[in-house]
Length: 98
View (spheres, rainbow, N blue to C red):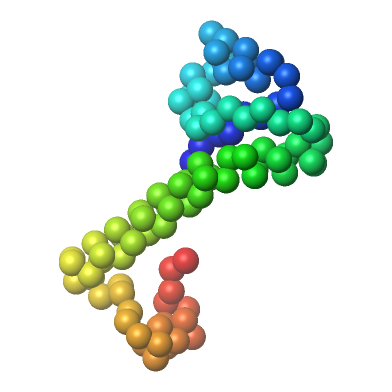
């Protein structure tokens, strides 16, 4: 997970570069975005401007899920189902992890 810092003034840059800015947060800053609006419009603009960075976060999460899936297959844990019928049986019995 990451953090996108957005604002319409120089403060966002000063904040991110400040010594007092918590280093745990600083390590998570993925992008600093300059927006033209405040409030909800500014938030929407920040999301739009950082869409590529945010999509990479989702891609990485999905990549971890696929890795876990293949790990379960390779370790033959019996926790994996294949195909529509098998998946539906597992869903109906409550044996599916999401």
